[in-house]
Image (cartoon, each protein chain N blue to C red):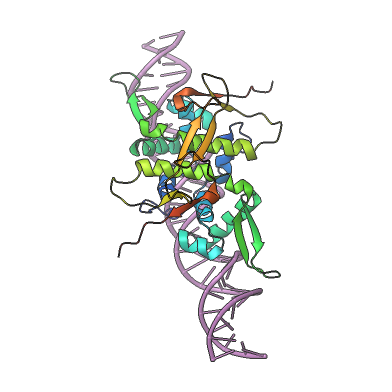
Length: 150
Length: 150
DNA sequence: GATATAAGTTTAATCATAAAACCAATAGAT
DNA sequence: ATCTATTGGTTTTATGATTAAACTTATATC
């Protein structure tokens, strides 16, 4: 691949986010973590990912503070990977991806997994709103760039 | 890479979404498209992406129906790439990524670009709610898997 | 104490990406 | 109308990320 371009210095928050979780597997691992998985072999079986890649992805997710690794038993070497508070802040990203997939990537009658509200057993909504509560879409918004220094 | 595993057949909508826009560049191109860019050279200058890779990404985004390519001038060969209605449905994904980046990937005083509501000039909110309007987080929800056929 | 499973690491082959050179078509200047 | 620069790519070559499989060590199970 010749050293994937890093977006770490970019002033765009989306770019930095993609720099951290924009690779092929990280968000799939995070999805499974939201689904309750914690162990190496669970992720491996669920995703069919190569073990070395899974090990590296888990390592970088831990480095970035999205997952925390804790020994399963005191004194043991086996680890459990759990979402941190920061990791749980990826929830809206997962919900947004899911909604997009549901809307556009399934045939009309094709079955798919669903994200439901535990209390009501009903699907959840995702809304983007202005401060005053108006729903806003892409054409109602604007990206304001940061001024170049100098 | 040895043939990246395709998630096309997965029953999880997030997985299918990542199969379409989960690679390194697609969402960055979509971000720029939301920002008003339409031309090959604009994307290329903005992202610093290799030209062959940009050409392929644009092609697959068009194939998937996220971008539409139209000639700039009738009879000409130069193309303009614009978000389709489907492409604009990626807006919540972009907003969610941006919010995550803003919250966790910038130093306290570090400047970053902002997404603002055109009308009020204020940042937008993203909420996940149950049908009855309650705000819900990851621990309030559950993924319901589709039954295996057979 | 023997066997199986978990959680990786190492190794080798393959394929995607990046960078740069190349090329045709268009737009602008003369 | 012709020369030149820019646009929008394609081709070529190298590099390295990803994969699969074999290997290793530690932990559970019988």
